[in-house]
Amino acid sequence: MTDRVRESGSIRRRLLVQLLSGAGILALILFLVVQDFTKQLAEENQDNILRASVTSVLDAAAVQNGQITIDIPYSAFSMLGNVSDDRVFYKITQNSKFLTGYDSLPEAKLAKPLAQLQVSTANYLGEEVRLVTSTRLLSNAGVPVLISVTIAQTRNGQKQTLAFISRRVSMLGFGFFTIAAILTVYSAQSTVRPLRRLAASVSRRGPQDLRPVAAPVPREMVPLVDALNKFMGRLKKSLSQSEEFIAEAAHRVRTPLATLRTQAELTLHRVERDETREALREMIRAIDESSRAAGQLLDHAMVTFRTDYLEVQKLDLREMVCGLVENMRPVADLKDIFVELESGSAINIMGDPILIQNAVRNLIDNAIKYSPVESMVKLSFTYASDIIGLIIQDEGIGFPKEDRANLTNRFVRGSNVGGRIGSGLGLTIADDVVRAHGGSLSIENNAKGNGACVTLYFPSC
Ligand SMILES: Nc1ncnc2c1ncn2[C@@H]1O[C@H](COP(=O)(O)OP(=O)(O)O)[C@@H](O)[C@H]1O
Ligand SMILES: [Mg+2]
Image 1 (cartoon, protein in one colour):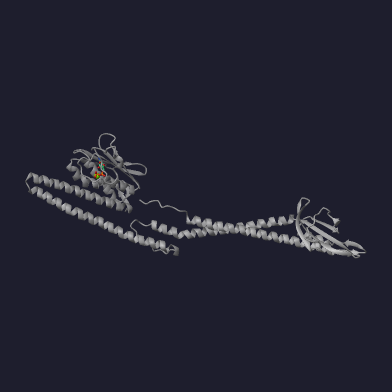
Image 2: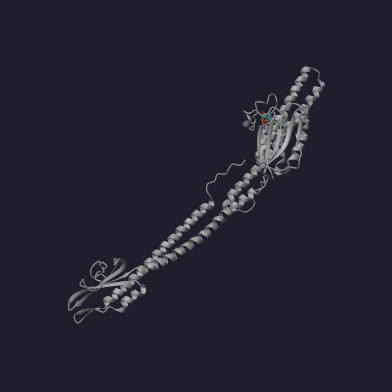
């Protein structure tokens, strides 16, 4: 009878997505920042060495005997060699005229002549090179001479180092992300754990267990559990009120009606006038009708109430039906109807005995009511792998084909009722009861001969 709860996403998944994307973004930022930083560091390192190298070459330039001499110091290139196996090019010019080195080597653009040192990146002989240019003004016998030195170095070593560092940093980022993911999964699990525990403890309870939740819960869940406890308190109160009301109403309606009927019958025996006797008979019939209708209304209320809170136990369906048949035999005898119950061993099902008795009683009552005198009502069982059916067959008027689909609705009576009294609740009760037990009700007419064939299907245990 419970409606499916509408779902709007999952807290756990939401947490996982948010925390994991946060960790992913952080890992990516970490990777990019470290990579950028190391790249800058490597470039700076190369630039510094190139600068030192250029400066040492320039320092070696001198004027000797009216000649410009540059004795390139060994250290100028050896320090570059230390960095990696990269190729080194150089070019020296005197007053913009090529002196030595690689003539085609471009120079780093100097912002202005005699500017300090200039660093730039260029493409030389198909490779990217970092180059540093610097100048020095010498005086040769009073004539100014501008010496320009350019030293370039390829950047392969730097790229290799960067690729190596990138690999290391991506491993670091991946490791960071993995640890964050493990922590995320753990924290998402532990966030929803109290909710799961609460749900499990509430759903483990029996239908009658409406005690407040006593186990401690995290602060954020206190309002929910508080509301749940209050709701269960109200439910408990209203359930006990309904139960009391049903019992009280049944008692108050049935008792005076029974007294009235007894009085009417006693009076019927005392009076002699035919009109009075006829009037009393009418009265008894009306009392029967109201008593029956009241009984069924209350039964229906009870069934509706109880189907939500089934008190399920293991029971022997055959034994229960046998007891009912014995109880109802006097009613059947009034119409000379023979009620026959197929004999056999115990048939166990899980069910609420009060509800099942009510359902079967209504069906036997129908079978007797809609059958002619001196006929037979037959009760038998059918078994399938996981289903047990109780079949109630009579030799009466059978169900009208056209309204069979609606007969389980409340207060609906068939077109075949004639003068028979009833309130249209018997099949409703039977249907509600089997459904509450996870079974079904089948309303058919006998394949052979006359009469109805109603089957109650229950899951077997
Ligand atoms: N055994 C039966 N044979 C023929 N018709 C039946 C039988 N049982 C029920 N019905 C039809 O189904 C209708 C609904 O049954 P029920 O809910 O028990 O109401 P009620 O018996 O009070 O009329 C009845 O009015 C009748 O038309
Ligand atoms: Mg009925």
